[in-house]
Image (cartoon, rainbow, N blue to C red; front, side, top):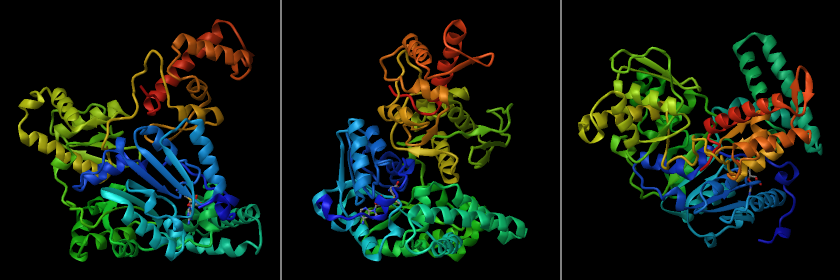
Length: 526
Ligand SMILES: C[S@@+](CC[C@H](N)C(=O)[O-])C[C@H]1O[C@@H](n2cnc3c(N)ncnc32)[C@H](O)[C@@H]1O
């Protein structure tokens, strides 16, 4: 479709702040497919389609991660596609195709894809376009391909819909996006304050909801609260749509949300009696957590899936997690119950020495991921046991079962590929071209797990020079020159200092600290 055939749409009027989405990376999707019995295509040699790719905030980092894979992005907002094209050319990406087109007009000529991502589109478009998206996925997926579709869900959106309707009606007809947003924010502030004054459970809920919307950027609020289409649906309705399009429910990108056991053994048992199947269980879980958003994975209907998770499924995967032991003096070899906690509050208690050792190893090595054989060997070594070859099969299986439990609780993450970053600080450290470009214009950069990292000034000043061609001495020279040019200011006794040993010493420690932070945030590459 020619660009001129499409007129201005709401996303040209107010662009959507498109961001990297770690959960849509093909290697993450492949890991979940593997967990449930699929043999998904390798992420480093695959074809990925993103429907509604906006300014490329998600597609371009993926393309940089996987230079031998091919990425196609489609969006009908001309200004956004043009911004994505500029960014792709700045990053010299040769494996990306950006199409300015309406999804409604797409056909088989795009070819087949191993991974299809459609984030933030489905519940915001018409019934016809929803059908088209699922049809396109059905026709375009390769036999073991995986599609990711996110959408707003009920019951979580009921409260938000009430606020959305108020915000919508509160804006005068014909108002500009800017004035609608300003009035919407004023209304939310009123609800947040009034909710707090009520001192009731409902008041508290209203306050929390209004405050959480207020924290969002304008572009997000506009498309979520002022678009004419925002029709959250129940999970079971989405699955009915998928089945009508001849697609199969695979699971969720947030895998841990699929396990009723996270609500306790009693709730799990109760749900087993109450729910005849997986879809019904998932629907009940949505009600338990008032879920407002889903990131559902689909595959073709004839793919055999294994819902019962067995250790053999995870032996080809990689594991990582920040799982701090709560007892600083824990004895790995004892069978005392020890508790581990992740920063998101998820915790797990175990007496198993093998699991305790595995979690300590992963925590110490954060952000590094370990393959299963690597982890098994390291656990055995830490416990002073025999080499992996001599380990009885039961030990291997036991660790596998324990790791499955950690995946189910959300304590550990999985991936199908080794890390795309290094934690080693080399003589001539390097960051990705994307991170360097981002750091030149702001403090938020994308790391090699497709997460956003907010940098402090010192780290940002160092990052922009890490192109793999400068050693420490030359990096220090660049920082000194930046001080001379007035780009970096260093205060000594409250007065700006520009030269001398004190400046050199300060910059030296800035450099050391920055490199350590970049290494621990998955921002260094080989
Ligand atoms: C809420 S944004 C999500 C953007 C991106 N996927 C993300 O999550 O950052 C929805 C995107 O879908 C695009 N879109 C909506 N309807 C479309 C259609 N019919 N054809 C092509 N793009 C469409 C919009 O232009 C917009 O960029």
